[in-house]
Image (cartoon, rainbow, N blue to C red; front, side, top):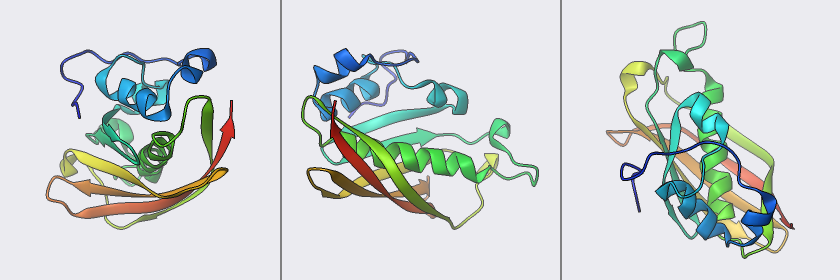
Amino acid sequence: MGDGSAMTKTYGTVSADRQQEMSGLEFVQGLVDGTLPLNTIAQTLRYDVSEAENGRVVVTAEPSAIHLNPAGTVHGGFAATLLDSCMGLAVQSTLEKGAGQTTLEFKISLLRPITPETGAIKAEGIVLNRGRRVGTAEGRITDSKGRLLAHGTTTCLIFQS
């Protein structure tokens, strides 16, 4: 489990051909260790994929003024993106070579306001069930004190690339 500090992260996409050469876990671990580029939304929103193991992925971020809504709190879409990412990547981490996944639907609940003063936050996605065609996962966003800020569930379609 890396924190990405040993290598500078890059941003972009990984070709479908290259993705087919790796298992889902190899792909997600490449995002963690910086050998594969993070998607460009991670650059835009300033989040990182920091931990990956089979069925579990952690995304981290530090909310700042760039994430604010008109009310002065972090926009709910930021939390939604972090949860969609950690949950979808958790499902991805269980896939064999040649398989992919995409989010069919997700639901989130925002429990506490997130502000720049919240500090570093962690979104942890854990697979609940993985079948041949559908995977489900749950996600939790917590602050550095372990307080639950938001949580969600996802359903992902699994397909052969």
